[in-house]
Length: 194
Image 1 (cartoon, rainbow, N blue to C red):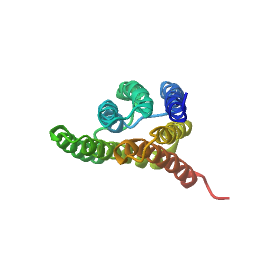
Image 2 (image 1 turned 120 degrees about the horizontal axis):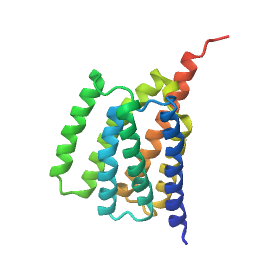
Image 3 (image 1 turned 120 degrees about the vertical axis):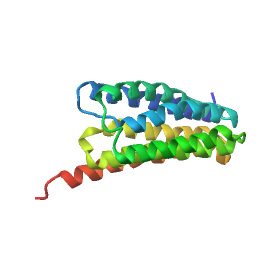
């Protein structure tokens, strides 16, 4: 087994491992997923998988494949146990994501499609970053750290300096650790100073 395959499998393992703690926390009422984010991500992880496949990704496909399954489960749980969905920022973000999704639909360029998917996904991430900062106890730190580590491993699994193939795993790495930092900053804000 080569280096790229090992990191591809590790990206899938970290991605898979990120969901059980989050799902358990949701069911216990400790985590409250941002509904609009998880709706956007449910659509996009599926599209991300097929776009990465179209630009020639191989071992790094473990990340979007496993994420797609986990994201859909969390979105379904968010309908009952989640947060938001009808706030102004949710509606504006969903509208912008929908418009960008239309642009994606009409492009026949796989590289542009990946860039648009990353842009739409970032819109969902923005909502969760803001919520994680405002309500840090509503997120599970380990989930986002594991998922971000999966993105880093997928980045190492690409095996070529191809911007289209590198962009999605790099984004996953950055977006997930942005949520980690938002949680940490939010906790610091809430913690009383001694």
